[in-house]
Length: 456
Image (tube, helix red, strand yellow):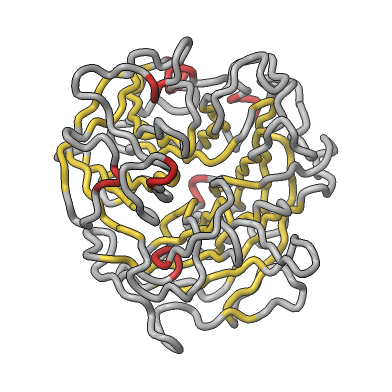
């Protein structure tokens, strides 16, 4: 989640500047009245979610409602999320099995609706974040909703593993004794959607203690890539974790491994790169103290070559034989080396290079909405879905492989004051295993939607 701001971000809403590398073949806005999307958004008479004609939604879960398990109420601040087949053998057949949704709750120490503590699933009773699990029948009905992880803090995003578990990331560095916590925080936790008690509440300490945002796992080598969301200098790092038991299945990451950070020689701050297609060698440097026992990792001494930082490293996902990762924005007034409205980078592990694929910026229609892209995922048609996280109207945008951007959903629930409208950000966009349903969260108020329609 970003700090509140209201700077126009044309690329998140409509266009990109420059060539777009391998992600997209071009970089143009969809012409008014036509284009690649599903048509204009239709105002929702219920005032919750505006969608194109032919699409509909179901509210699966709402913060403050009772959990079906009887464990308490649905927690607030719905964030990162992933969808898993209830029966992995039937993932391509929606009539044969249901879906399990694992959903993060980015609760800080002041959250009003905590993740209820549950025996065997709670790490720190004083922490209010965690994950909940929704089970959906083949027809989309919610059949169960319960706690999957509790006693963690500021669970922002994460990522799925090749063995169908969820890695939930704490976006904090608070130690025991801070904010009332009884244990150190800043870890990754594995959640098994098939049986949360099997994974328990065990911090994967070897993966580092820092403000985690998202992770992506290389399905061929088992290497885990991690982003660090830091918007105050020194900014975050991009990491890779070399597990001792690569691709070892549920629980294998507890065996430890080696944590490294990305160094781009001669580039101490990724914000200075402004030419899409620019490619640089990638070096991986051992992290001196992954536990950050005395000094946060991004402050540590990485030797004469230093290390490469970036402001607001957020989304991270695997595709095209490598890992895509996002810098949501950079502001020179906040200490960045240069200004930009968002970057998408690609790391090719086979060639040991990183490349700037997408540069967001006001090079096209700045009058259109868009502010601070955050969570992203691959769409069934091979393009992107981008969640907004900023001020003003909040959208989920689709981006085609040709670089055209179109609106998919708009948050219609005004949570502001009279005369000062406000809409909550979107988060956790993901698709069902068969690609026929999009699930997405409205962060505030915490609402999980299932969107169906003529998806391509």
